Length: 142
Image 1 (cartoon, helix red, strand yellow):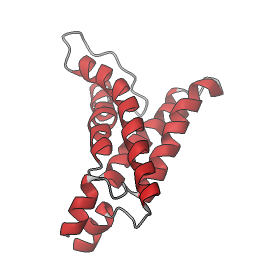
Image 2: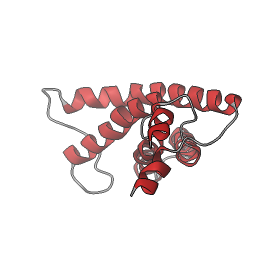
Image 3: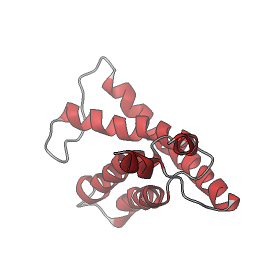
């Protein structure tokens, strides 16, 4: 079990330039995604009845909750570099659902941004957070 946990918090052995690049990527893409997640968070806790897409058939409220968890909570984790690889997965999934299901019948222009985000989250899931992250602190303790 310790090996499994250590792998999820592994930040990689990268030169400073790569770690700084990963920090910039995490922080910028995290902040940009927070702008999407924050609006959905307001819908979730607002007084109005929830109107949201249900692209995978789990119900409107459940779809919104999962999207808020990905776009808001996981984005915050990504920004600080906490459980970075794990946090990138719901973000990746959410962007793939947006591109391939929600915008399935739309032109490429509607799919381009979620596909770009999905690619970034895939890279982050593969590389990890880099040494300027909470994950780095945790991995040193493991």
